[in-house]
Length: 578
Image (cartoon, rainbow, N blue to C red; front, top):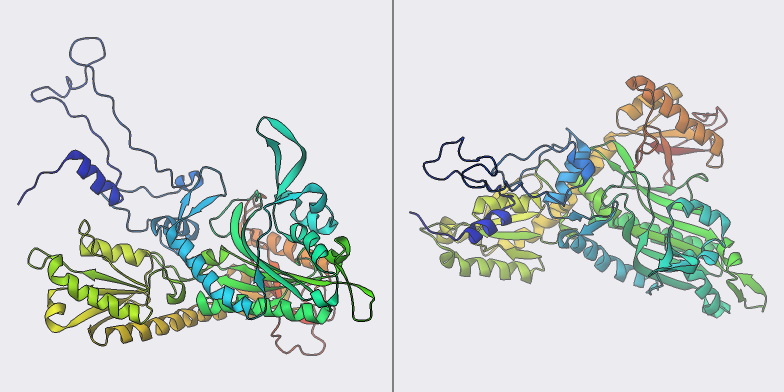
């Protein structure tokens, strides 16, 4: 059979399928190929100008140089890179083709498309009730901070100075004084804390805000992981004692562990940062550290800081205690960013695309009717709608994909690439038998299930998938976490993409920490036959301390630090990091 279509309809169809058409100019009937394009001004008609294919503005310029070319006619549903072939390019493919992000015309800034933003909303929906249990309230503070306030705490501003973005003009005129765009909110919030806190009865004060932050990162930006603007929550609290503040620090960090492990199915190592790596101007920093199997690198998941009284003294956050004496408040700050999404993608994604943990999947199940000439959509619509209602009654986030412009095979590939945990296929035979086929994204399992029990089976399967994804990721991490007690084994294990746990003389020994960084870089480059690495690169072959884990293996008496040879006081976790 044949049909007639308007050119505009054809263009719309192929563009929705992800194909950019190339316009060709054909010679007139009867004209030779040489006469098809006569030179201008000498007989014949002027040739039609060749219309070049439009450039894809959604792709980064840096990536285009290494990007595999899409063959003519391909819909770009398939990734061009495999995860173990070129991890960085695989990641770029996944986040673009799965409709997580689009690129923007300012380097380091990205558009979070609805698919990724919904994941962030689901994290928020879980996190807000949890912090309310801790008596933390949400608020919002301005985006801008004056230069005087930002520079009030010397160590703090020095830690952020290279990344601060400044507003210096308004229209055609210069501002009287530059205004910083917030890199973090300590210096924005704490003058208000000083106004609000007068008595011990005003404590504790516990606030959280969901906001954006700008840090003008100069190294190679990576969507979700290292961006010049990102979204986050930042909690800020004030307490009457060191111990009360310390409890808050650990409570916040425990929530971050749960976000990664319970929602994102990503195992993390909680611990303390060393003095060298702690938050600028703070007393101590705790962290949860993740591991990316595809690159063999660690990544900082989230941090919770005990600020001590440093900021309280700088911003006069004083109060009268029960004895009427003036005291300085003890403070904390803690933050979780959209980096979480990038970590999840890197840990779980495969050569087909995203693999989403059910708890944060925007859609947990998609229903795809298998239509044909013999079985049009009308025959399956009511049956599929019934399945959808039964899933919704179980609070399963689901969708019926009844678009007629795409065939079932295209839909299968599309939703697999977007990482939907479960696909439910419904064809004429399923209708006859009163069943549906359930296809699981994680592992590829296919099961025919009776329609009456389908919703219950899906509900249980989502829990099973969530747990299975976490266990798989934990095994990958544990297989690459090794204990080393001699320096000769340190760099070889880094080269094997391992995290390395070593005896250490203490987090205060910043000089030896720097020695390990330099020595590991030198030996790694030497083993690879390379002379050096680009200082502008976002990642390095050098090792850095990730954390001093809370859970410490036994440390035999007399154990020496792997670097200094001094008596070891703890185990510290090292790795190459993002």
